[in-house]
Length: 628
Image (cartoon, rainbow, N blue to C red; front, side, top):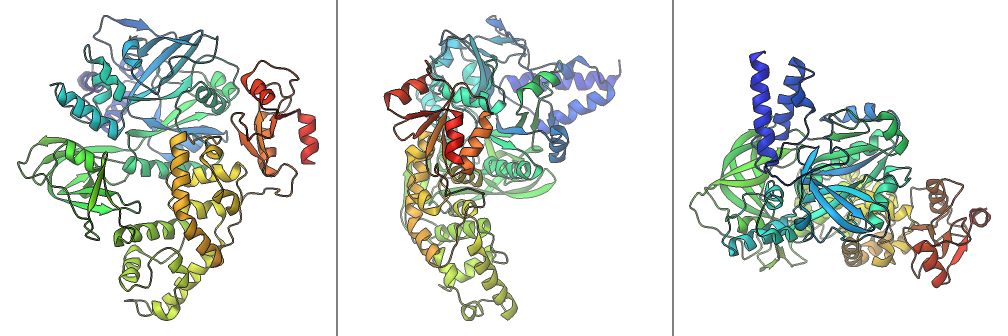
């Protein structure tokens, strides 16, 4: 056999083994390059079709359906070609450990790791400690659910402290902790620090789309990944940019995006290879890791007052770029790893975002320090869980970051970060509304701003008042208020600024992607922005929805839940409700106005609840009469 092929086989097996034992030796990108090299030399090599890695435990259980890998690409254009004009669903590709959960008569009976794809290890006892996994679900069907076990930054720090207090070895980094905990034979209760998101309902319950399968999982009580349905390349590109942001700022590890055809019949038509399903594909970011030294640590203040530590490092080349700065995540991570000047650290760069700290390679022997005073305003800092805060509302960096975020999202061209800094220094701008009080004469006092540029800036600021409602909302910097979340709020009938300002957390939890905590955070954050919104409206913001919604309809503002037997597509009914200003709810509650179903009697929980609460139950014919 070709000597190069043997060498590649040995390397791939070695790297697979270390990866599935929780100690990856090379980046995903480097591993994929080796696979491609082997594929060119020997396209039918069995290692290319192998999934996972063999287990070293006697407690092996065969999977009823093989847990396959995913085909992958690093090129966004490949996704557009692959989808071939079909609707696709995207979710973050969480970097943890995949597992399978089996339920019988509603009770959790068995949990298995992915293992080598054919056989997994029984982890049922450990899974019982993970709060995100319901131990009982409402169904009599035999159900199999697959998902990802992962660890958040906050949980990792709490887990590390717990392990140290028990005299156990301190975990190395967030990347390998899940495999380490799931592979333990003792102290299995440490699994309570892990989290879980369900991404696949394997049992056929006659759901026609991937979206409906995810909704079914959510109904069963699982935490599911936030998903987006894509109908064009623009939304795919936006999702990729949003994912880059999460790579940099998210509180758990992801290594890309999973795209899946939304129509289930396409899953059946396309089928699978021995290695991967043809109806799913992973988009990944080329990643690279290096070891370097910390020269200093600086702390940056964000618009929400969080002090983020940044390591100024010995410059190294990563993914084709020279890197001199790396994010150290948060106060908790710096404290946990005792990070200081002189430490040698491993860093990773993916998706062309600011690189991240992974682990300490060698202690530099310096002194660990954190700022007791805010580096921007000099006020006292406060520790809350794993973060360090400045609570001064007048903090210059805090104000600058809030205004800059608004400028970038609302689309005011030619107003750079440096120019904004100068405007703040000259006290011409103090908050977002003061942007709209700027005069040409004031701008001419700013360094390098001549008459032509001053006119252009005033024109661009004025033009931004025509921003649509979704763009405006996403620019405010509301907690959990990314563009796609704001779009979902408006699509669910909250299509005027008045209705949005009156939002409650109860309203939001009825909308896909909002859990109880994220809904509460959004509402509380929105409350703190209300004065800004009112001022901006008084300065001439129009705040029209860019969605064609009939607000004069009889159902405008009315809340609908859809269930049971229907002759029309559920998605078409949902669109009709939204287009006419109505709100689609995922469940029935006291605020629901109508339950839409063709059933005259049903044992479903939604039907029963609607009957108990005396909510109007209407069929499709009555609904169509309402919207005429």
